Length: 154
Image (cartoon, rainbow, N blue to C red; front, side, top):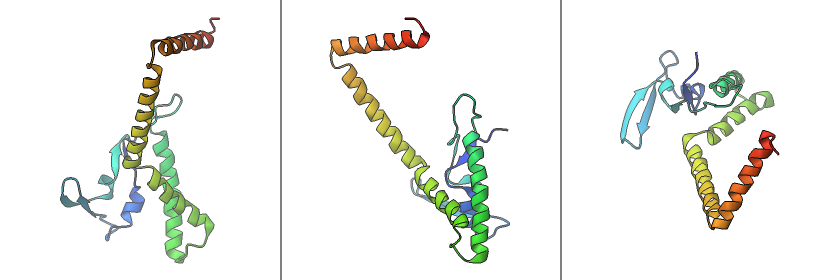
């Protein structure tokens, strides 16, 4: 079965903020809707198909499955850190620091900023390509030449 609900903040991390490990509940404040509620970590910081990949030869949830393995390593490291009350062991420290880095980079807000940047760059390139009829004709000629080369027609 393909995983569809992908967390950008791992449940293992969210569960650390729950008081009762047998019935984990989080107090959530939705700043946009201006309301608060309690829910399980499963329902927080997640989006449908957030980590989906559409690459030939890979399952759509390949990244999500690899992240699950990584999060399992982080969970074990956090347990050892908690038991030893020490953050000195680099074998335990590195997975935790990698988790923090992932959470800083893999979130909807940053993804939106990257997407906006890419969109602006694409529009600027298109504007440049269409600036004059001669430039557009050169673009078409280059595209045809590339297609002919790649298809083996010379």
